[in-house]
Length: 397
Image (cartoon, rainbow, N blue to C red; front, side, top):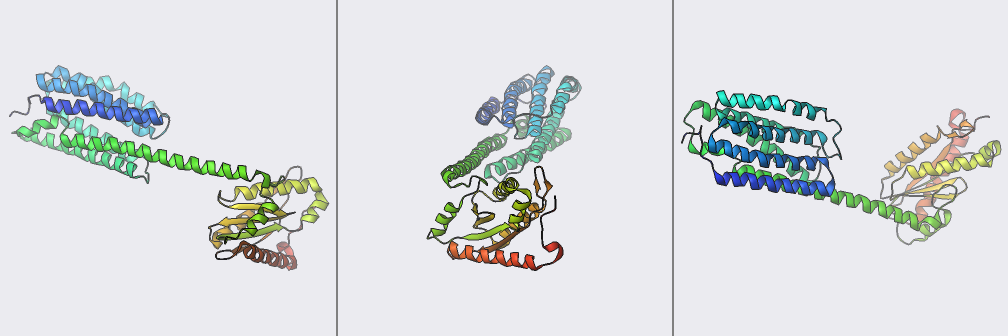
């Protein structure tokens, strides 16, 4: 069979048209559910491919180069939209339309060149260049799509890579067969979307659905964690210290009386020479310091951790299911930030902050707190005996 004027294959047309319609509906559904522009652009692209398949079929049926211009128009538009999708990523909109607009602006020139190319050259040269363009587009989507740990996202990216390789193989094969002459009869199917192209696009579409489902599951998990955090805060409302916003002494007392062992690290801490600060700057400044320390402690722990005002200028932090070295690093960070402490109306006011930790694994919380308290006072006594800069004093006004 002379592959330069292949017979039309109605079955291949149905595969292309039904496939384009199916994939377009899948991505349109994903866009309507997620409002992610990436899925919306893929839906538009498959709508363009639906039209391109019709003109491509007429081109094969009539072997008239006049059908090449509309066919190339919609195929190139398909490529433009997929490039736009790659640049948009999983955002709610496209930040930079300039690349897309530049590509659209050269579309008429491209179509004119393709039409002229079709008049003076064989159509197979166009098919080879078209497959090469699609290979580039799929590779571009593969490389720009952000990496995700989800199975659906990995399958989606893998499908893009395989499709890119398949279209590259199409381009090389078509170019070779029609330049060496004597192309076999099966080569005419390279003008259509082949069955394994259709299968790969099915995998791509359903991987996109899996990727969307995984993102929804992740979002539900995040919302559940936020709701759980808000619920705990609501339940703890009566147990909050009004000044610092931390849990109060009564809440700590109930926590200590709990019969279950505490799994984690307890930290006890307080300010050095806080009475001197109150005497020098007044109780309003002291309250401001305690309030800001409460905010700092709350911002320095995870949702599952607990921070208490034990009384006066003394605080307790319970790091649940945490290693002792990590808890000590957190406390060192808090102490470092307090050295740069500033009070409104007074400027820089470095705070000396003593603390001690104890690992509570396999022990009651009361025993863990007692050990942490002893470690804190041991550090306080060491600092009180140390001369020079190790002994922090409030600055003069």
